[in-house]
Length: 269
Image (cartoon, rainbow, N blue to C red; front, side, top):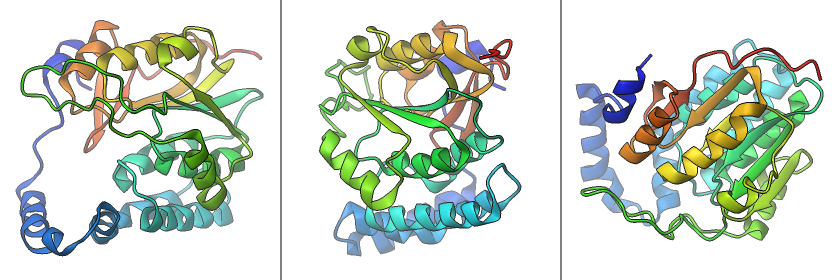
């Protein structure tokens, strides 16, 4: 596990040489012939899609639920443009699926864009009895001044609640989902949070937003909660997490797990 000091500076490890060669071949030989981001995402399934087979392993889901989850993930990746790789969302889904929900427990997604991860999480949550709370400004990434040499995400990943609901209807399970629209400082600051949180996926591309989310959810985490950031590649996010005194463990590509492994005693309620 990366220590707090490491979290400030060390991003994702360098990929192995074979992976670099595969990417170089894709970028030079395949991507120029693909007309859209969705076409590129479909092509990458040949490399990443096998990750979904890991969802078929032992979990609290029935065999039928596992098969339907894998099929739903593949269908989503074929039809809906999103910003994660299959190995990343597989790690989050497997963490959620280690047990069924206790009364009142929720999974949280902070930053959803069009709902690519939301629809996959909604399927697992519905099967296991979790509520799914989804937070997004629906105005794109908040305006900010990026650090020198870093990409400016301001305004990107903008969608609407209507787009998210339509994608949930088409690809996911709307029943367990609560959508909270607005800037995190307004929604989380006003206490619009579930009582008990089993898992968190943070994908907001900002250190400020990451800190707001973790500070809001930390007191409500179950003892065995799992917390993930999709922004491990962004230095300001790693520093924000380190400033909260939380360690980071790289999981896959741009995904890392946040926290000490145990968040305290189990809430009897």
